[in-house]
Length: 72
Image (cartoon, rainbow, N blue to C red; front, side):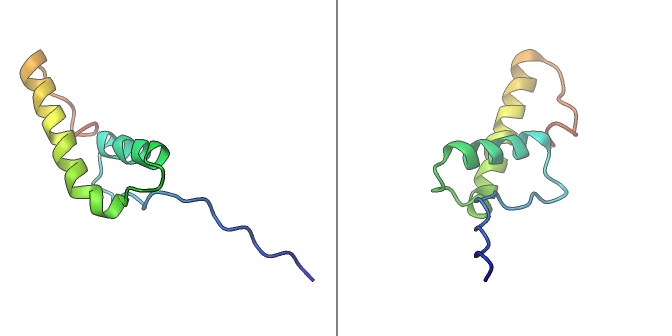
């Protein structure tokens, strides 16, 4: 008789191809420090607003454009 398979660890939802590095990083931080209480699918719109706001703040404050690969 074989042992039951171990349940996989909770993983964030697979990122869509249009996620930039900033979005992926925020999703990973939520997965690691959110205690499993944050649904990455539901938080996607809010995360996008947060990272877009951060990108805008950096561009406005420091005067340089962030590459699209990092934040679109």
